[in-house]
Length: 280
Image 1 (tube, rainbow, N blue to C red):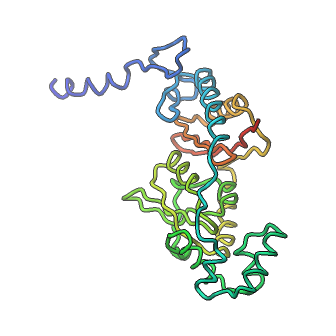
Image 2: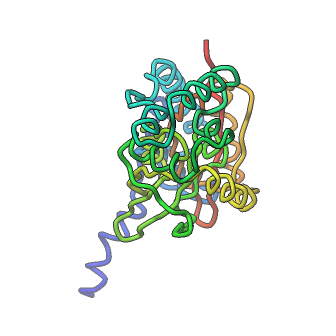
């Protein structure tokens, strides 16, 4: 009898009605919702009782996020330029730097790639200079580990020339390697979507390209990207449909530059949806 009495609070906590986070919900208190074989869905820190409440609230949230993303400041780039760093370290001559800068401006190709193509410096020298420029260590990808909990959409990896390279389960710390400059906004976005604490490091460009190919192959079927610009209402409706189809129990999202990254999580599966944010 005593053990049953101790169990009652736990049982009641599971069956007690929950309040929908949608302020306009007509069913503000409900006992269960079987609309995708789960008791509603959690979005960030709110819980929603059904697909209509979820979609309507998500559309309003995304509209505000879209406005905020358009006002977002560019990534902080107040650093000693890569060319000057290589020059100061004795890896480039002044004439070589001038030639590389001219080709960089004419083609739009990244300066580090231009320097490597011209043979003015080795990849190790360029990578080391990049690490000095940004004040973060070089990470050798032979030490890279993979973990499903830290999967990042391949489109974001391509746009930001980055990779998740090492995950420490005990501390939830994720090392994110950048083959170019570090964008701290994307690190903030990763922290909002994934259960981890991201920290930057620098990786070699050739190792980045080689490793990315295998990640793209493994990601097939686990993510979908919409290349055209989508309105907040369109995004909310698409996310709602995928959530119902996958029986999602939780959704997290973050703005990543011109894109919205959404992760749907169920008991067995996770799915990433990437949208291009509309610009007025």
